[in-house]
Amino acid sequence: MDPLILLGDGATKGLCFVAFALERIAVPYALIGASALLLHGIPLPGTRDLDFIAAIEDDFQHVTEALLKQGFHHGKIPHRFYTPQRTQVDVLPVSKRAIETEFIEFPDGERLTALGFSEALTHAEEKPLGDCAVSVAPLPILVALKILAATKRYGSDLQDAMACMRQY
Image (cartoon, rainbow, N blue to C red; front, top):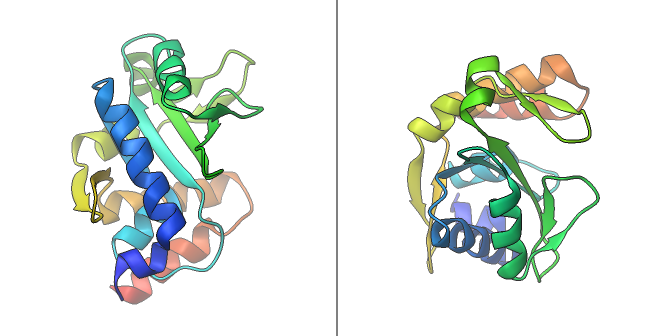
């Protein structure tokens, strides 16, 4: 099935909006999560929020400021934003320290595993979306990230990984 149909018009516009914003500030990024699986042609039910990882030098503040200048609104958690069209976007900051420690540490003390994020950024593939192209983590890395996430929390991650394997 056509990934653009799977995503829907709103998510496609949101993806382009985020891609343009991150490219303007020259931040390497990769789309991960369910939307990335949809761009690989894996039909999934569920939410259509957008999950990105972004390579940062030191501080996430310049990314936050740039996104806000582009019209994003900040959410209640440090890495959550909303596009003007109200699409939820999580942008996880991946620094050199996060790659070394395999954890992203947020100012509020929250820690999130960064295992696999370096590979997702290094091997990201450009996927055309009509008006733009979006950098997307490769399918094998996405499946690995979904399996890892399934070991950390209850949710649809394992079902998403299984859907990829059935499709393959």
